[in-house]
Length: 136
Image: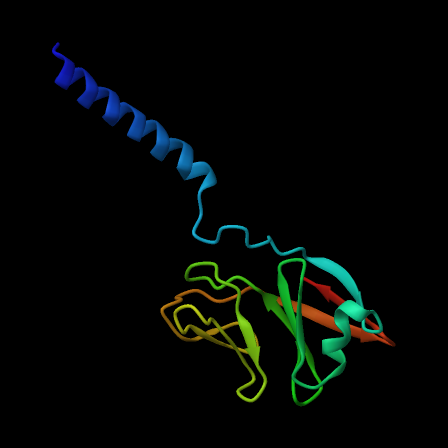
């Protein structure tokens, strides 16, 4: 085996190892948090004051929680199912929107317009006084 052949085979081997290791740990979403499925938000806390306003929203535990213009609380996973970019809430359209590639989801997280082709995970909400429970 000559030097050129040796280096060529070593390069392919290293690339193969990289691909195998990346399959288990690489993702398009980077550091997008994984959604926690049961927690309570204190609506009087400074970190959640946006939820006291109609159309306001916050991100917490990998979930976007919003108050619709009708006063209903809604919650879906915050990572777009296309490439994991954080979605925003558009209260005037009562929908979630991905600013990266334009995917649109209704207030239940169902895809309305791609390129995303799978829904956001929807979470239940229950308001008790100033505590908002978000759960699966």
